[in-house]
Length: 156
Image (cartoon, rainbow, N blue to C red; front, side):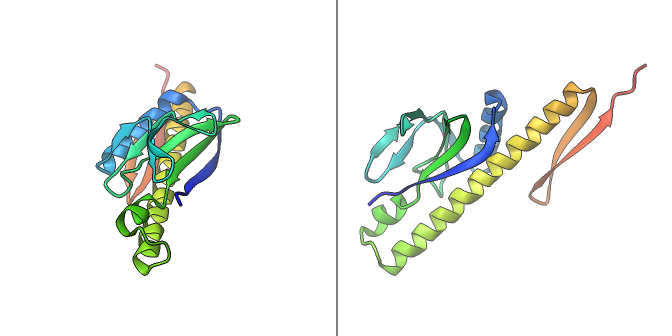
């Protein structure tokens, strides 16, 4: 009874190199690792595609060892994760209290990872655009968020 949850972002025309950088940074901060596959309780291990779309990259973390994958469907970034896998492997009983608790935790972790990646990608893309327009940028993390400081380069 696996369930691949999908979250389609509003991001289109994604710069793949910046996206990979965002994925790598998020994986590092979550003690995770980068892969290009995800696991599913019903669909099997090391899935490389979903609905005829290649999984470009995935993050496997201690909380989501099955992986959070990213693919592009009709030009839009889509995140994927089997949010029931841990619950099914641990309890094998749909409907018990532990199952629902584990499912809820996986769903929460999945949402948090996709938001972190999307926010960081957006920040990196903004920094790149500002730099291309002649601004000197400094990106720092503050209280769990990201701050970009930009200063117009002085022509000398």
